[in-house]
Image (tube, rainbow, N blue to C red; front, top):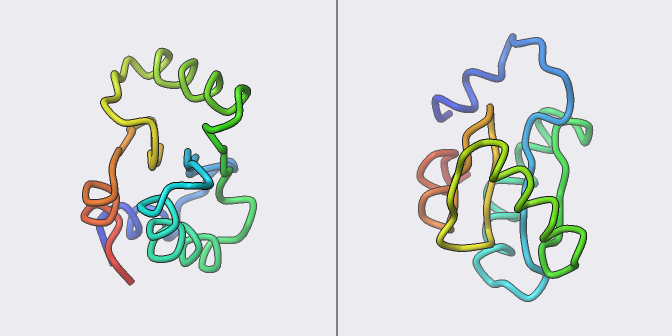
Length: 101
């Protein structure tokens, strides 16, 4: 397991712990959903994460507000995974950080 996943084990967390920004028409988002998000949800439970579709106005606004709060500037809108106040963007960055399962 990746360092991020190991950090979750035995740690009391207040849900949600992962926030996943995606677009429903994004192939990279579908891959990250399959190889990272769904396995983590299965392992830690549905209260562990929130999925937000940035193709919808409210989702896009939520993402902009959270990124501003975190002081993060994104070059891509989706896929983006927020974990422990850190934003990871793009298929490769997310898959490398959270491991391909």
